[in-house]
Image (cartoon, rainbow, N blue to C red):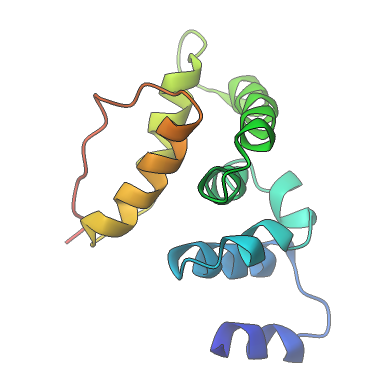
Length: 130
C-alpha cells in the first residue's frame, strides 16, 4: 500500500521504481500486480524480468511464463560475462541467487515458479542473506 502511494506521488517514475513495485507485489502474493507494471521495468534492467516470469508461472500462465523466460534467457546470454554461454537452468539459478532473501519461504516461491515452467533447479540451494 505504501509503495503504491509513493508511486502515485512520483511525477515521472523510472524503470527501477516500477521494478520495485513488481518485486513488492510478487513477495506479497499479488502476482497480477507484479505482471501488470510498466513494461519499462522489464526491458531496461537485465535481471528484472525474472519477477514477471515468476508471477506468470504462479498465476498458472505457464505458456506465457515459458515464452517470457526464453526471451529473458536470450538477453541474459547476450550480456553474460563469464566464459561460455549459460543454459536455461543456469540462467534461472543465477536469477534465484541475485537477491538477498532472509526468508526461505519467499525464495521458495520464486524457485517453485521457475520449476513450474520446466527448469531443473534441484541444485539451487537457499542461502540466507543474514
